Image 1: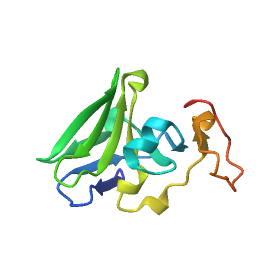
Image 2: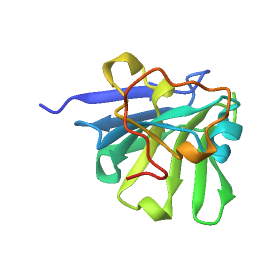
Image 3: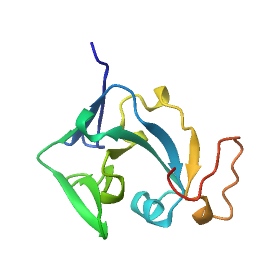
Image 4: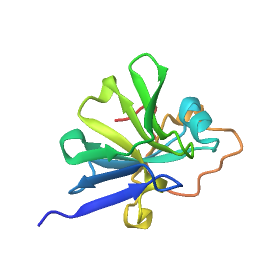
Length: 132
């Protein structure tokens, strides 16, 4: 039996899920992701598209830049996924939208050149200019 990981937006009207293990879990420091979440950085779980599902009456996408869609719940406004043509193999779910985010441990920081100057990282995770 394959493990299913589930998640949802703040109001619960939009659901996400995936089977199996994620391809990666990273903290993203890019300006676009920071603005989308109003946070100093956010954490993503990269999931193979053929193992992922998003559904809900209020599920909508915003085209934030060329080749990029940011999926969110139109009812409560919660972001649930980042979807980029540049990474056609994966959908990037927001770790905090998962029901049990503590079961996944980030393994790296990405877009580190865009990190806010007052964010001081106290971990020894690898730091990358882009998603490796």
